[in-house]
Image: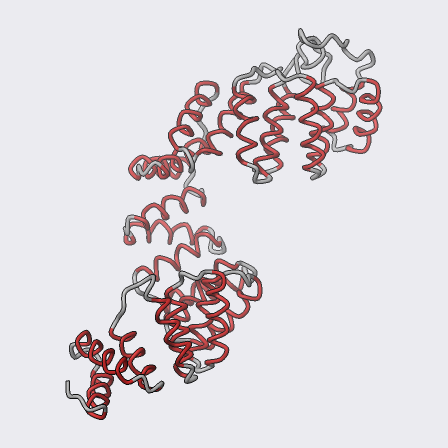
Length: 439
């Protein structure tokens, strides 16, 4: 949600001929309702305040509204206006208080219900926002402008598009009964369809938007994302390439281009694309993560580690980043630092089998075999043993002179390896001979 959400609502109220808040209409909220007998202001003070707000004179508008509210503390129209003024000033808490006061003054004032819901949604308080927006859909606006009621339904559809796509679809249909479909509605239809596991409808909607607005990056990103989910990379690639010709600096498009290159096993080209993108968006953590993971996958551990170090400094509570850095440090043979990164990751995400594996390897390199065995035991709670973990257990037990267990795990390793690890198999067989057994 953006400031434009509530701004749209206020502007619609002022623009509606004959019955807008900015005029002394008998249909204005909170002035002539059955529950409120207060008279229309005699000198047009609210009209003057609203005119000043429309001209961005917030100081002048506040002076008038403060004076008016000192005499008419329960005027819902004035309370809505002061809420909007606070909203324009980025004072969400004060705007919330004012809108709630407007609703207390007149529970049937649809505009304040909707405006409050928009502010709460923008602030991430979605459950609370939904209550007010749902209430707004059950009320009639003070103006004859259809956009206000339709906006309530559309906002409800946006709120529910992922969590309850069926309800979101119903809300959008209600909006379309009131006002014509827009490109934004078609995009919302695509998102709802995708959340409903209906890729055909989603694809049709995205393509409808692009047919009317070929330069829509939002629709392009949505369609390409959908095609990538279905592994239709060859179909997605020309759409994305065309969009990048038009908008070569768009971060979402470039990120998707890199993702397609990675999916098609073209990591070096992906690195070029990601490095270019990082130069123009150095603070973008998503780009940094993609680049760091790609560099790690291609074996450029020093460059990857530099990126992971920066990212973990920015997000010290991100276990995946810490595990990524642990892998880099392990390959760079910086074993104490690698252990520290893995241990920090496991404090945050104890079920991370990759981190347990890495900790076992790093501690083995440092001859901290008790830690190696503990890490392997923890790893086995989340994922099955492999020939590598059998071999690592065997060498740890061997080094700790726990010979019975060493023999057991050398034998398990040889039974599972089946010729795939010739060097380690040779070592295991010779250790069994040295320990008095033959394979």
